Image (tube, rainbow, N blue to C red; front, top):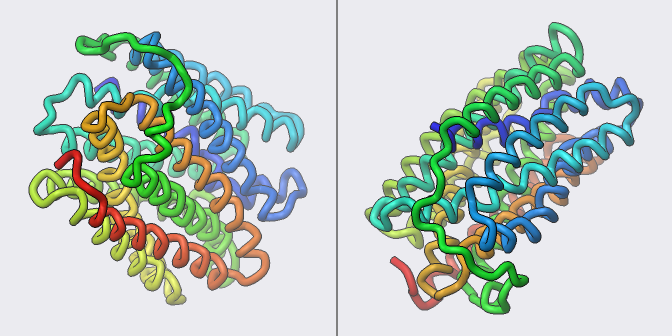
Length: 379
């Protein structure tokens, strides 16, 4: 329950400005590509902080970081709702991203230490499923509240939700039972040389970059002709995140049975099918394409993110450091490729966004197939 609340708060707050991009663009008089920076600054700050927080967690423990992370993230989110200028908003979003790092940096390592190995892939899938619910809830609440009282009202509402979740985390999160303090030294060279880990880092960057690019572009597509959906109405599209939860949890079960190397490529193919479906004009087909893409993406991410600490553990590498490097790649990809979606939309409309996403998902597929040739250290 504590990890569910933490994941819900963190990922609701991380992408809470995504359904508000058209409103932010209009309110602050910035372009669509500039408005996407409100998402990218948070993910970039998160990615940078992971490089510090990951090694730090090996010394000070997991639960302290997770508790303070959720609380700090929620407080910065509340300040963001009152940002007086565009640059102030971006600065606060960057600080919010830095504060977030304590949860994703150590959650997978925490599960590795506290959950039996036979159930680890399943537990990881369920945790990622919880973050999917958070991502959906944040976008729905922000979009719905913005229809009632503007983007500031939506941002404040999400912040209150985060503060409530922070209270749950402080109250319920169990202290680590199997954590053993280690050195907080910088990342070891083996983390950057192991071919399987490098491929997984690449999958993280390209898959999430494509995923965020699609949803950044979708907000502008649905708010324009011929759909003309409000922020609240277009936010309902994020209900397909429920399929992300099912995709992640289901992929975890399949990975336990058939192996991770078999499941990740299939997830990549599903995402490519989703991108292709979104090229259709009717709104129901757009939603269907987003649903298929979301299920495939969370299947890939749910399995790959759990694979990283398993591989690192089998190789005798710090699991916290390996998970942090995976997530650094994940949020760097989200920042860079997600931010490029605004440029792709401005220059070529939805076809440009779909092309960007298709190329990135194809690269992830190639990397997942290359993993089949890497010597096995874990099952």
